[in-house]
Image (cartoon, rainbow, N blue to C red):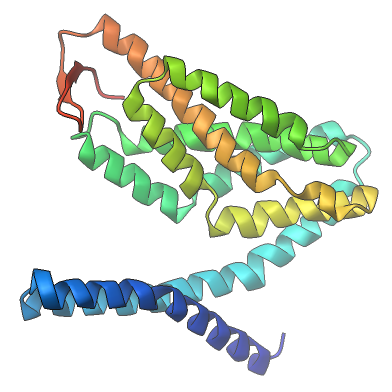
Length: 259
């Protein structure tokens, strides 16, 4: 890649990020003018934060485009030629855990959950649970792709299991689980894991379309993992109901211990 191409692509990414921030900025301006009327010192902090977000997202996404995607393509070519496709499971597990744990949006969710629950639900526990869940299911998914098996054999039963899991999961964790499924499919996961899946499918079976569905599996895996965490939490809740009292957002009370 030439230097000129690099800067042209960087500017394109900058404009793309800017377009996504314009509606948010416009909404904030409207609310501030008519309702919030924040002091100038606070507004300066917000403007500085928006500028940092604009440039930060630009460099982050551009780095993902020029580094992660080409690496995923190259790895997919190598993995597709392996004699033992069973190795795709541990490889997928390892890569899935690393990519999910590094996902910025998941860390934001974990911090918000820990703050909202007053530390009862620990952010690190949420990240670890989601990462292990996503890594495990990605391992199976890459093995399916390597074998040429449609990913719908994972997606359909998985969503059925997620619906059943809602019956046994604390309702607080149900909401967290589906939010975790959404944020787990961030730019790192989409650019790297989906590209890797497509590359494996293309080079192993000359059918790149068979690699689609991995992003849905990532979301599903995070949901199932956090629901399982909620089930474990509920079991501990019953065993330690007299230790710590925690209030749900709805105003009802339940008792639990820190995870």
